[in-house]
Amino acid sequence: MASLLLVKNRKVISSRDNQFGDESMITEYDDLEIYCRMLGHPLNFLYCRTTDGSKPCAKILDCWYKRIPIREFAEENFSSQILEQLNAPPTNRLHSILELIEKAEKGKDKD
Image (tube, rainbow, N blue to C red):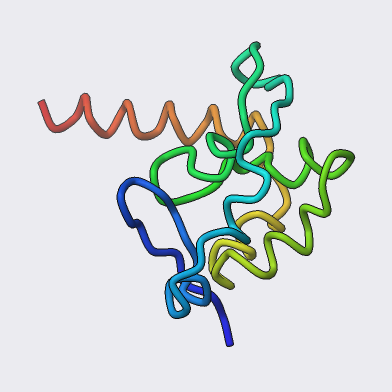
């Protein structure tokens, strides 16, 4: 059964944990800290797990694999849709830049 992410009091919990009223599994690593290469300062796992309030950071698997069993954690606590996004190959930087330029040009045409 795939886990669904639910937001409860600004905490993301899995449907499995919510079903039994136990948030301890998803929050067990929340106080651990690691240096964030993207933001340039230490962050705790809670931030990485709930970056935009409902989804984990796209780099969570890369950053945490040496500290915790992150793959197992993700499989137990994140939905299959989130897992697909986390396991997807990164977009090419040039491709991302070209997409941004295209969006900007479309926005300019509307004005």
